[in-house]
Image (cartoon, rainbow, N blue to C red):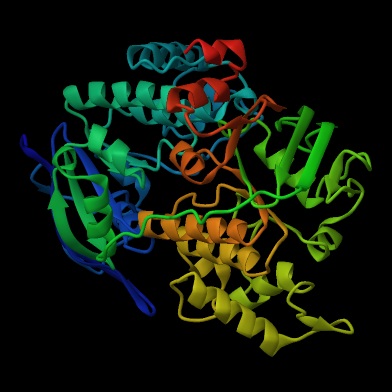
Length: 505
């Protein structure tokens, strides 16, 4: 490793009831691509927030290029050469690329000069962007480019990236990796957070592993298997999801030539979508974010009502049936946005258990909520899905993203759905939790349920799906058996290539 750029010594940060970081120390070298690994709740987010000036450590020190470094706010961190691309984009859909980038600058230049600079930097690093395009019209991959270019215009010495490939096709991942390798070669250090361990192995020079807030080890990813890294993260042997032998039954859910207008001005309307899923089957649906996934889930959940015969459950038209009634007859859904859509942030886990479980779990009587029964259901979810929380009375927003995801999926699975539709079931969760969620889905299917799994994680879809289809600009490809389907073919399908084009890959 070259000379040290950033050195962390004994960083500790505690919150009521939990020590997020406990005496963490490691170094990042100039030009090094350094992975930060750990299961959900391991302390990764708190650590990078301290580096970026969002959180102040209780104890410990940082040095940047040999000088004391203690940013009081992100502005100070940016002034010292620290930039960060967050997992959730912070862009305004109605503004264009240049206007969004200007909002993140202390003293933005005239718009014409900024636009020219955006073109120059984006082309230099292989991430071409039109500065005058409206952000609401951009794909998820292009939006990420905006965030990266915004950072590169700061000429950073350290670039922090949090789950940067979760919204990208395999081809877009390769483009991103070329950019990061070019930055590394020019001397920019990169602190890279991801649960995709094969990506870590392909990209990163070194890795630091956190577990329960402590630094429990380091490794060279290229010389360490993904399983070994995962087991170092969780501290136990990793269980691989297994499929039980099963026979598929009748068609459980069917969509016929469905058109549905997106309720959002920048959403993607569904165009002539047809699909069917049988009892005992997992239908995997892939696609880059923003190609109609949210709209498809809303159509299936009953949040968007459609023509009566366009959606059928066990042959019964339900296009005009609302969400609560659909749950009552066995169609359950789990949306991608866990905080705000799948769960109410300021409500307790018990209250969130009631939100979708009141009918199937008998959590109300004559208009009154049965609090003890609901609390028992929440406790059952917490125990069965290893949700790390002090108890069912804690607010949903108090959980880490991965633990809230486990709670949301567990809440639906434990209601014994006949059909379950999930969007991004393991988004942002660690390898151990992802394996547990996938196993729960496979166990559900083994009991005769039908599952539609919408995901941007291609490895996930290949692991649990019987058939695969791709959403692109609101259109769904013809489902194909996943056996024998290559990742490259899937990537092309996600990009809009179907039929004969894919056959020639």
